[in-house]
Length: 126
Image (tube, rainbow, N blue to C red):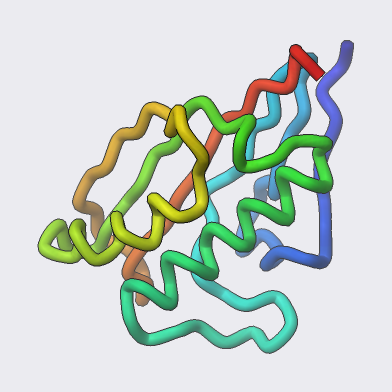
């Protein structure tokens, strides 16, 4: 099966030369998402607000690709400051049912945002 581009106006559009998501066979890959609200173009100020918006953007892209948050098997999280981990983690945990996806969380230099997250979902059993 050839890869299929996933595109939705329910999530912030790409800020560069990449796709919001790609479906390749039984997998859905979602590009790193920032905290921009697709309806308003605005971003929250706190790590809690930004984490929630990032995950809402991811949720919309997954749904456009035929997946859900429950299908996510791997996430990679970039935080502008690892001291924000506990606050981000409280919000993050509410978006994923058990078993939670495996995750890597790192401190990164981000351009004007506090958090960026990308995910991989497996939809083969559907």
